[in-house]
Image (cartoon, rainbow, N blue to C red; front, top):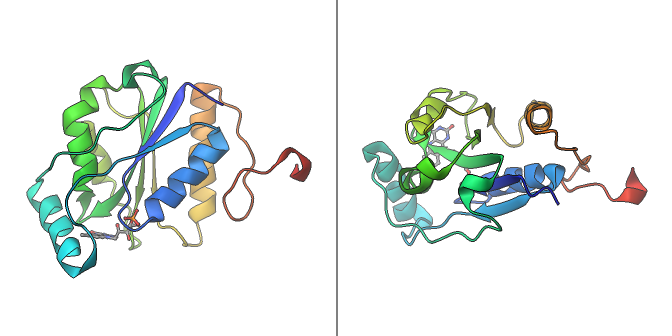
Length: 179
Ligand SMILES: Cc1cc2nc3c(=O)[nH]c(=O)nc-3n(C[C@H](O)[C@H](O)[C@H](O)COP(=O)(O)O)c2cc1C
C-alpha cells in the first residue's frame, strides 16, 4: 500500500465516494470519508445543503481516522461534490478546522452539470498554507470522465512517483492475473 498518499472525501449520494474509491484503488492508498451530524437526505436535506453552501455555513464534523497524522502525508487528495457553485459545506468544515495541517494537496470535484467550476479550487485554497498542486473537475458518467480521471491519476503519479494500478471498467483495481 502507498502510505504517502491519503484520499479524503465527502459524498452525500455516493458519486464522489465512487470516484474517490477508483482513485484510491489506482494509487493503492487510504480513503477516509467525512461526515457531519446534519440531516442531509431528502428534500429538506437538499435544501439545507444548498443553504449551508451559499452561506458558507459549517457544522461540526466527525473525526476521521488515518494511519498517519495528516501533516505526514506527501499528498492529500480531497474529493467533494459541488454545491451551489461551491465546495460542499462538510468539506469546507474540514478545511476550516484542519486545512492548516495539510502539506501538498490535490482536488477532485464532482458536479451534475457540464460547467467546470474552476473557481471552487481557488475557494478551497483559502484554507491551505500553500496552493493545491493538482486538480480535476469531473461529471461522473460523462463521455470524458475516464479520460480526465486517468489524466489526473498520471499527474499525481508523476508528482509522487507512485505506481498506478490499472483499473477495470467498473473502476476497481485489476488483479495480477487480469494484467
Ligand atoms: C445542494 C446541492 C447543490 C448542488 N449544486 C450544484 C451546482 O451548483 N452545480 C452542479 O453542477 N451540480 C450541483 N449539484 C449536484 C452535485 O454536485 C452532483 O450530483 C455531485 O456529483 C454529487 O456528489 P455526491 O453523490 O458525492 O454527493 C448540487 C447538489 C446538491 C445536493
